[in-house]
Image (tube, rainbow, N blue to C red; front, side, top):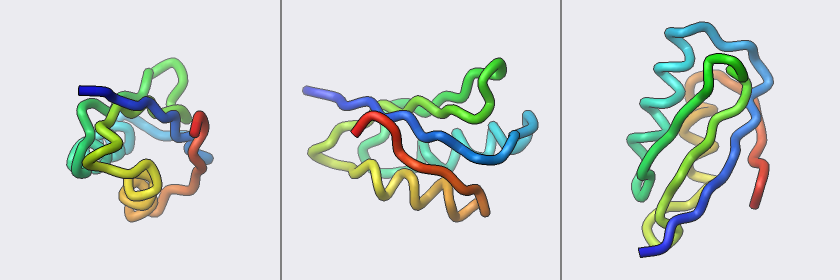
Amino acid sequence: MSFSDVVIHIDENLNALEINDAENVASACIGVVSAHINNKRPHLMLVAYDPRRGCSSHILGAVRTLGLHGQLIGL
């Protein structure tokens, strides 16, 4: 199995609850293995996913459903 990584740059400064929500919504996407935001860099989310099952743009779209703004880095 081969995984891909993508970084999502989130424009907003997130608090702990918003970080948790963003990680959960990204983790719920099909193919996502892990989604993590480092507390020291709360504007960057690292997502590992299976590109045969999921799509980075769908992950970004899920994060945007929270009202967050951002873009994909590392495509």
